[in-house]
Length: 298
Ligand code: HMG
Ligand code: MG
Image (cartoon, rainbow, N blue to C red; front, side):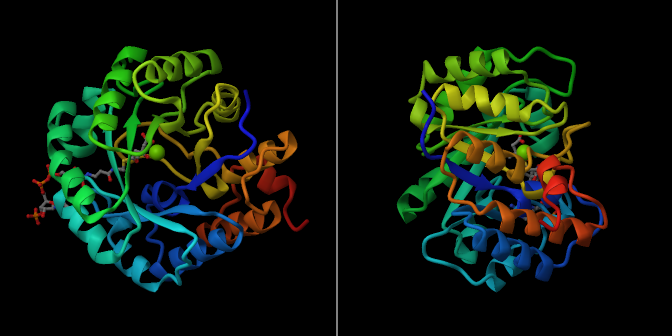
């Protein structure tokens, strides 16, 4: 059954921008985040505390966190790969953090320079510290619907990592289609496998739209009762360590679909579209989102 209400987790300022070659000044990131919040976004990833050598675009996350005007009813989250990232997150006053692993060994190795098992070991002290400090954390599983490295990803492999992350105390496990290759039946099979080992209510979805399948896959997930959706304004995004990965599904496209289905996201489409054009104009290109283009100036 379809949920009547969903929680959109906006990842535009992190996943959306992390792959941009052109450095986006902190002031633009701050304005982007504040505009998204003004449009009704209640959970937002503002950046990541990862190695600036690995992802230079995110090097100013502390500055962004310091400069945004925060609202009490909004969750400001950051991505953290290890204890050093966790310490940065805490110092910045992040409301919550995201830890991340993968269903693909090859991807995990390239993305965070360690095996899946090692990544879980590395995250253990992070989760212990977060628990002690009362900071909620969610977890994401990359390559859940396919890998960029010519290998088969089984639903069982996704379920296995998901369970381990859930057992480490993650309040949500986000099933990520890093390179946007999934299709609806595949999506359902993977969610089914994961829902066999952890509660359906804690499963989220984070789909990139490389093959134009993300909305169809979100519908498949919604039909299974999933109500935690990640998306990125203007369809920005991509992972620097996943060859061929393009943007996340655009938040405008998701909100338009939800509005049409009578599912409440709490987000004002008009303000969202204006925000998609704000960041796209800065990046000097049109949003990839069909909805943002169709509703331009309306
Ligand atoms: P490493 O080289 O194995 O780590 O990288 P290290 O511990 O040996 O440290 C190397 C250097 O990085 C040291 O500096 C550390 O201090 C520094 P040096 O001594 O050489 O000057 N360092 C840090 N600096 C700042 N913040 C930190 C930090 N940690 C170490 N937290 C590491 C391992 C994890 C650090 C590296 O591989 C890394 O930063 N990877 C991040 C990759 C990344 O951000 N990928 C994109 C996000 S994930 C994603 O997009 C997928 C997702 O959207 C879901 C999906 O779509 O699939 C979530
Ligand atoms: Mg992603």
